Amino acid sequence: MSEKLKVKSEKFKGLSKWFETHQPKGKWSWLGSTYEAFHTFAFTPNRVTSKGSHIRDAVDLKRAMITVVIALIPAMLFGMWNIGYQHYISVPETLHSSLFTLHCFWFGFLRMLPMLAVSYIVGLGIEFTFAQIRHHEVNEGFLVTGFLIPMIVPVTTPLWQLALATAFAVIIGKEVFGGTGMNFLNPALVARAFLFFSYPTRMSGDQVWIAADLWGTDAIAGATPLAELAAGIHPSASALDMLIGTIPGSTCETSVIAILLGAILLLFTGIASWRIMLSVILGGGLMGLLFNHLSPLTSNLSPYFQLPFYYHYLMGGFMFGAVFMATDPVTAAQTNIGKWIYGFLIGAFAVMLRVLNSAYPEGMMLSILLMNCFAPLIDHCVIARNIKRRQKRARIQSKVTAQ
Amino acid sequence: MSNWKKLLIEPLRKTNPVMVLVLGICSCLAVTAKLKPALVMGASVTVVTAFSNLIISLLRKGIPSRIRIIVQLVVVSTLVILVDQFLKAFAYDVSKQLSVYVGLIITNCIIMGRLEAYALSHGPGESFLDGLGNGLGYSLILIIVAFFRELFGSGTLLGYQVIPQSLYEAGYQNNGLMILPPMALIVIGIIIWINNSKTESK
Image (cartoon, rainbow over all chains, first blue to last red; front, top):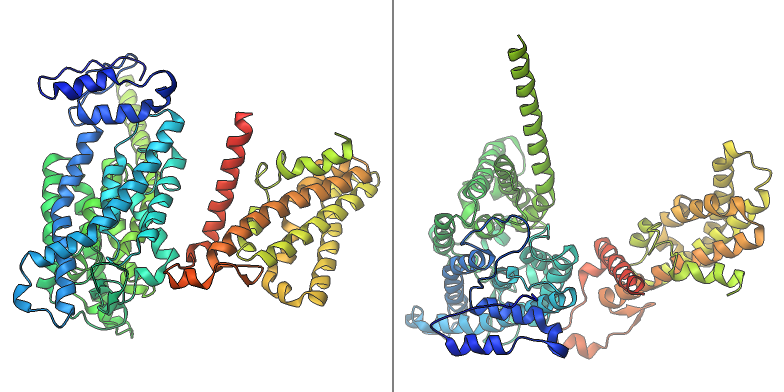
């Protein structure tokens, strides 16, 4: 950071000049990390690394992160509309003809805005503080995490609980391990798990999913398909509704179509691993089929056992987890074979938890967190096996040449 | 600082059995959901550590080193049974809450660690103080952890409601995660973190 940044730009000359003349020095030099963060946010630095060999790639961390945020936008927009839609169909005095107007979207937008603001202010505040204390550069990892956290909680989550969960996720989930790239658990899911175990009454049940009014934490009763199944009832929403996403649920994870739009972008740009996405879907589907075949053998007549396997994709956060959470490049397995194993087990465990443990209606969060813990072990085994195989091959080769 | 003061004060911070040596973590997770059992547990461990240190130190010249672990176990288990019976007689409720963990004091690494590392090679007076100091160091961490867990997990301290009812009406909720053992581990981790960052900067 001590090197002088020489950034020239034909446009934004004024801003560029401002940055050059306002480099923190003297008694302000402790603000170096913050300065650097905003400077590189505004301009691409032309600094060259002085030591060691580095892989240069046009897709740096900032670009990768912003791509994920763009991929999340369809789900976010749909989520905003759905918050309003769920509210207006539950309030009897509303005119149903106005349902598809901007009213719904506006309502959801106003509900989501404070949540996003809280998540970003708390999370970025902590990130900047830690970067300053440690004299690190501020990392961009939180751009995605801060976007994800409000997307995967119920709309009526109190803002102070959201702030607490964000702080917990950033400090305990990430910064204690060394910051972005060092965490072994997905921070957004840590925030959700914190809320889930700390305030279970606000994270499950049928009193949290539909906002009763524009402000406050009151809710209108409405159960998600997963909660209905956990209670032993067949879901009341049709498969088409669940595909489009017009069902109660966590704010932005209901619409499979919107999530798939994001998935297309992630796969097209290569930011997320197609192996993980595919194997999560395979794992969940095969587990669902297995339960279908087990159902005649058990006396357990829960409707879960007879549920067609593709319902698991449509309900709850399965697709959202598969596309945006399991593929987190930091916490996922790194080897190609490891990715298949990691993804497959996430899908399988998620469906297993849903069907067999009615205390946890949604298994996706816990199964991704569990496999996050095991990802390094999977990688280790895959690499050890590779080394062994190559050594064996080398021995055979040397024997052949000796003969 | 005189010797006996040093023996008592050092285990509180500088050589704290939980914070620095990371011993006795298991019971720290198990009994710290409420402050009262934590206090009783801390007192019990302090008594057992101090007196087992004293007795082993008195016996140290007569114990053949090949069977010293067995002798130590006999002494510690005798003391643990005494403490257990005492609690059952005079503090039955707490004894119920602590359940198996009083009996498990015998497996607490701090006690065996102090016997092996200190009592076998020092005089009875010093050993007694060392045991007392380490017991108090353990109790200190137990109390800090239990304080935060009971305050945020149940909104009470020693069973009395501390967080006002008006706050609950304003939408405050007790943190359920604080009651669960994982949070005790995280709280201990944070205590170690703060302690390390303070001692490193010195």
